[in-house]
Image (tube, rainbow, N blue to C red):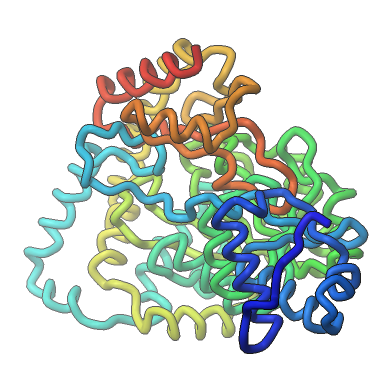
Length: 449
């Protein structure tokens, strides 16, 4: 058997002892990512315990994000079980070139600062530090309508809610619309924030069959019928971590399946406005089935924790209540700044500047990392590097860190039990200067050989 735990020295409920032993064996490397566990009945016979004891232990380990099970294929140690889940960068090591976290360089925040200073000189500025309408004021929700319209999606202020950033909106949507133990389909590689939120809420993520980094119709149908997923989470534009842009055909197909199967779609549009020619969101083809999230963190400023959420009627009250329970109120100051930047056109100016900077940076990366970096449109905020066979994403991440560059291995983004791709994601937008970017790329190129 692939795992032979010893219960002889444990005390208390045996299913909890099994969970502790599994956590310990994963931590010390006895159980490695992707290991297939013995069938539950076989393990129960080996340990001379009831089958229900094994079932309870496996269920709890699944909720902890340690195990991944699929119908007819058994139970495996998750591919990302040893991967770090926190992806924000700090400033404790100024010598480290940050190319892991996706944080737009602060030099682009100048126009945000100017607008905020002007706003704080208004006679009613003290109100910006009080509570506000939990769902956002009418003016703020109208700004949300205008913001979503830039993505090619038309809605109205009665179907828009404000949240304290994209992660806040995503966590609220999961908590409001799914229950503990429910299953949500994702790409086999996905945004780590949905993984941490799902783990917190006891929601199981199911990798959907992909072809060319897009969910297939067969994969979604299989997951609905056999895995009983309640919905799917997708990032159609500059998918994280691959930077892929989903085709129009796949967007329409997902919308059709959502209607046919009555499943929820959570569409993360965080990178939509960075694309050269934004394609219509999935929400535009099935607005009654799709929660559409769009924040300002990657396009305007990372600290501007404001997200606009299109919410269909059937989910509105539940999501509004959950956001209230989590936040009580969004920040009136940040919401007012966000709405003002959108209304007076400053947001558009900032986005143009961000995209122009991304074009320059991606040109350098494409030239310097040719043969490793996947091709993508020129305004992608990230790049996905395929590695030589002698690396894993995790081992390359370690080597890069030793060389003074932070990157993120594919293990951090993996869902399910299949071994992670030999790849890493690098941030295009984070290095403070072009010089920092070029030096980071030079060091990475030296490791790649």
